[in-house]
View 1 (cartoon, helix red, strand yellow):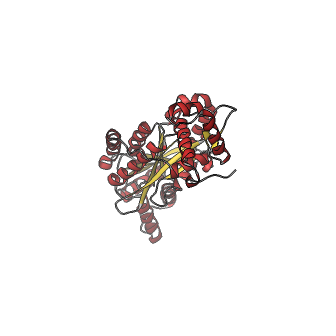
View 2: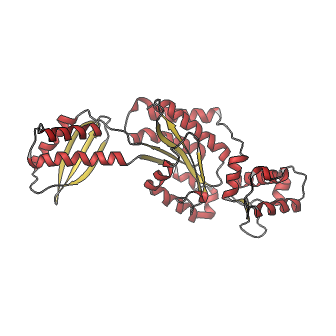
View 3: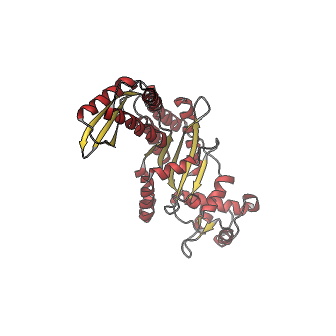
Length: 353
């Protein structure tokens, strides 16, 4: 089997191939020669169309799930279509307005934690594309308002960080021997007074300097807790990007009822956000939209899904994050790709560095 390129296909083969792709995108199922003959306006008999479809199958562009059931594009066929034949459909004025309203609401004033700020973007994109929406950004550096420690027993305490935007994060940390409730209060009071208004990175640097220089007005067990407590947040903030997924229910459409195993596989994959974030990281390099079709990415190979993702940059030119969608391989690439492009451009304009 040798996969063809667009220039190698005759005009007739290209026309029939496009008709199969269009029919597959519309219905999610194989397309028969009689359907093409009656709907395409081509002056060809079903038998002639079947011969061309057989040639396209031999070239690796089409497949036949059942005997006499028509043909559907393979992943390689969809790749050929997307790269060489697709005619992009720019978002309508109504679609652009809906995306801008959602994005504008999510970025207005920078209020709320990142998870809330980007939810409107993913929801708007999901609603218009009929896919699940994805947005990933580097974890923003929260500025601290207060820090406290709550004893849990069994040698553990919960560290509670409150940032200036009202976000609350909790971490369970192990306590060294002899840690008393008064030491927990002392450590929380010291950190709140010393670190308020600083980012995690700035707070950790200050703590390290004060402890090293002996300037920290805190001693004993509380001193150890201060040092270890801020390290927990700093390491976690550095390592985990923020990934928002919205609209998973849109993946369960009418065409999915015949393939529920695939949908379940996809929904399970989306639960593994670390793996999804790893896939989106591959789209960060460069400025172009990346399209992963079916088995081209290992994560969603079994579920037969496609991912369209594009990085967006801040005013300083640095990549701020990645926005995209995930849906079945039969998604409408010509419509959805420009929609993702528009969302990325609008996010870059509104979010800034």
